[in-house]
Each structure stands twice: as C-alpha cells, then as structure tokens.
Length: 246
Ligand SMILES: C[S@@+](CC[C@H](N)C(=O)[O-])C[C@H]1O[C@@H](n2cnc3c(N)ncnc32)[C@H](O)[C@@H]1O
Image 1 (tube, rainbow, N blue to C red):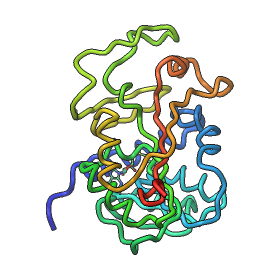
Image 2 (cartoon, rainbow, N blue to C red):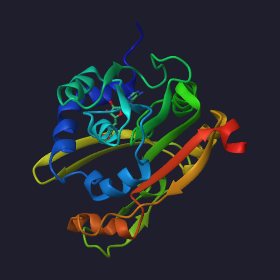
Image 3 (cartoon, helix red, strand yellow):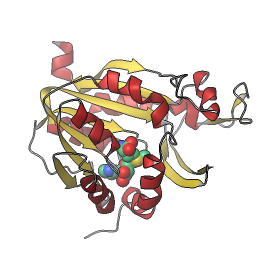
Image 4 (cartoon, rainbow, N blue to C red):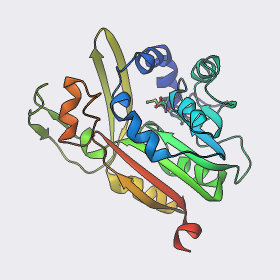
C-alpha cells in the first residue's frame, strides 16, 4: 500500500468538523442555494452515484428526488456517517480515481463541491466517465474558480471584491472558516475554469449546461449577500461526447 493521498489525509482529519459544519441548520452556504440546486438536478428514477458524498446531504436529496443512490467517498468515517443517516441505498469507500463499479453503471453522477479537492482532476473525470451510461449525465458544483482567487475587503454586502495575484494557474488553497462557533478547515486546489473544461473534454464529456447561481434572498443570511454580486458557485452538466454531438 502506498502513502495516503493528501486529499484523503486532509478529509479524514476534518471529517468530524465537516459533519458538524454540513449538518448545522442553515449554516453552510449550501442552504442558500439548496432549492435552486434541487431544481437543477430534477427528479429521476435511475441509478445515481454521489462521488465524494461526505456525510451524505446530497445523497439524501437524490434519494428524495427518486433516484437509487450509491454514496461513495474516499474517507471511511464519512461514508459511515452517511450510512448512519440512511443517506443512500448503497455505499462505497473509494477514491474517485478508482471507483469499484462496472463500466456504464450510472444514469447520473453527482460531484458536489468535490472536484476542487481531488489530487488528479483529469484521472477523476476519466473514471467518472467510465462508470456513466452512454446517455448518462454528470452534474457538478464547484466553488467558482473566480471566487477562489480574490476576497471581499469586509463583511458588508457592498464590500469590494479584490483580486490579488492572478486568476490563471493551478494553486493550492488552504483556509479556515469560523462562524457562529463552528470552524472548518478547507483545503484543495484552485484552478481556472479552463482547467475544468479541458479535463472534461479530455475525458470525453461535453458541457451541456452552465449556471452561476445567486443565493436565495429569502434564505440568505447577511454574510451571503455578497454572493449576489460575485458568483460563489458554478454548476455544470456534462454528458458523454457521442451523445452530446449526436
Ligand atoms: C467539501 S466536501 C463535500 C461533501 C459532499 N459532496 C457535500 O457537499 O456535502 C468534499 C468531499 O470530497 C471527498 N473527497 C476528496 N477527495 C476525494 C477523492 N479523491 N475521492 C473521493 N472523495 C474525495 C472528501 O472526503 C469530502 O467528503
């Protein structure tokens, strides 16, 4: 067995912290976008794979939408936490670069705020493509690549957004967020939109839809209001190329 990959090592270390952060009502930005994302996913009845499922919140949404859900994550503790909450129908502890499923197993693959964390984006997308049905769909949420490279000068809704350095190139990011008594240590990779588009293209996946959502004004807390001016998330759908071009 080789050394533990850095992505698994990081997420194993913060698994308990992440579970508390993700499950605390209305705490994470996810909640201000939840309804729009559920509408973007849409109802379905096929086999869905939630790659990098974490504690299982998106698996539970997919289940409620009618899918038969497999929840997979590289961190065993998180898969166990997802299982305890009855998040999915099946579970797997697996690195997204090497998924324990037959070719063409899934109608829908969801990668929700995971692709920024993986060590090898091209290999991950090739593996996701392999387990997708020829007419399947991949739904992706990313922290918007532009957001990663800058920051607001303060907490006010109209604070300036400042870009220091460059938008281009692949960079490691590490950051501690602290809010309402909870702490979360995020770490992963920041790369421009073109890196995602190129990796999708190389994996034989064509982008069929793109959204830059804004937070739901009725559920957005004060500190999320800035994200109505600068996109926090980027949502994409992609399908195997043969289908997209036919
Ligand atoms: C920000 S959390 C998102 C979890 C979940 N998708 C959600 O939104 O609640 C990122 C997740 O990606 C998982 N992850 C990171 N690298 C991975 C890899 N190479 N293969 C599978 N999962 C990975 C982490 O363990 C963690 O659960």
